[in-house]
Length: 93
Image (cartoon, rainbow, N blue to C red; front, side, top):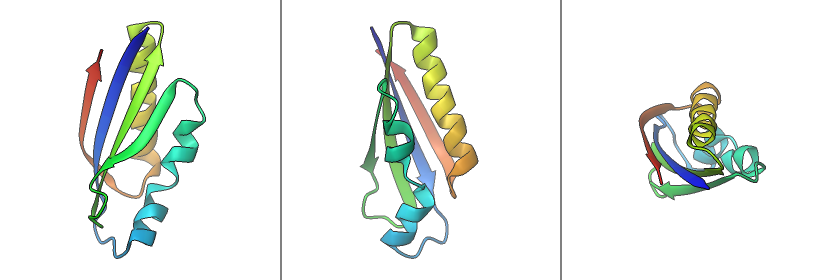
């Protein structure tokens, strides 16, 4: 088994409330948590309105599959979240 960790730092310019922050992040738990090979959590910037940090852990039997899962997550977030990915870090264990 191989494990990959993707951490995304997302800027949410103009965000005025925690409620708006949750709406703009668009239910990442529900979207990515359905996949049994992926775990997701909001891992930082919990109290900042204009920023959010999310970590995704993917598990698969091969490194290329782990990398594909993480790439798919990052691409989908860049397309669907009302914010801008400022930094993305990946680690394969």
